[in-house]
Amino acid sequence: MVLSNITVPLLGLVDAAVIGHLDHAWYLGGVAVGGTMINVTFWLLGFLRMATTGLSAQAYGAGNKDAQASVFVQGIALAWLLALLLIVFHQPVAETIFHFSSASGEVKTYAGQYFSIRIWGAPAALANLVIMGWLLGTQNARLPMWLLIITNVVNIVLDMLFVLGFGWKVQGAAAASVLADYSGLGLGLWFVSRVWLSQALPQLREKISSVRHGMGRLLKLNRDIFLRSLCLQTAFTFMTFQGATLGDNVVAANAVLMSFLMLVSYAMDGFAYAMEALVGKAIGARSRDALGRSLIGTTFWSLIISLVLTLAFTLFGREIIGVISDIPAVRQEAAQYLPWLAAVPLVSMWCFLLDGIFIGATRGTEMRNSMFVAICFFFVVWWLLSGWGNHALWGAMLGFMAMRGISLAVIFTYQWQKNIFLESAYANN
Image (cartoon, rainbow, N blue to C red):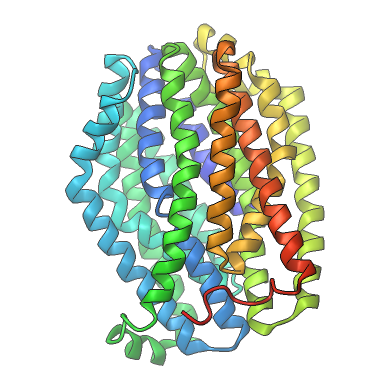
């Protein structure tokens, strides 16, 4: 999962590298703002994957194939309903976002182009979240690995073809992502059919006609994870749009550094995904020993990866920035904030691990509440450091990551000591 997840931010780095070598910073700024808009939109709906992983893993651990089928069908139905709503209302959503943005006219123009094209990939992108979650929940990490790798390789190839070959600039980068999403959907459905032929195909036929059964449990869990994701994306969106008020060079520099931050996030999320599947299986089987082994092994390896990433950013950060953009002002601006970025892996690894633990346990309420605390801390730190300009944003982001981990750790420690963590929070809903 770490290897496959890294392909996602690598796509962002390729986007940044391809667009960052065009002749103006506003192209990169437009992709940064437009990409943030689409990522916020899709990531707010990340509960589709997280809830599916936790619920299907618990069903797998309990040996309940009927429940596995229900989780998949309900997830796909909900994903396509939400995708339809996004497509219908995307224009007023974009206009509202731009109303509150202080970015330059050029950045807004290209951000709008990027967003209006990418939104048409919503049916595929949201369905892919469900497919990923279901495959992970059934303890299959190899198929999600190939799904992510192949989808992102297609995206990268089309990115270079459309932007560098055809000269489509920002529109080409967006079109490449849409086509890659649909290629991933076709591949993902094929993967699911392969698993179901041996496990749950009879249950699928029955559950298509009874998709509403048990939907209340899924919606309640999704509600809590949605509110948690809303807080998370509020922090990332504020950082992008507040950075835009500091000038095109700052927003472009932050786009480069945020690509690195996404690299860290997705690498750590590989461990979180593993934790989701393993913890969900352990809870479904009511095995405290299996849960303990998962915690120890995954924490050890995530610490090793975090140390490697911190050393890489510390030793080679300036060189990597030079690969992404050859605009001197952007490179100089980005280099100022490398110390913040270098600290991110070791600080943030704990919140990613604990996210995986709580998702596997389907404890959305606790995740929601801890994120409320973290987002308040984010804005307090930013306000206290607001005189530092862009440094205030990066300091707030680091504090946000730290508080996410601390709050979840306190809740987990309490529930572990009270022997209540193995209980499924949504079992009776």
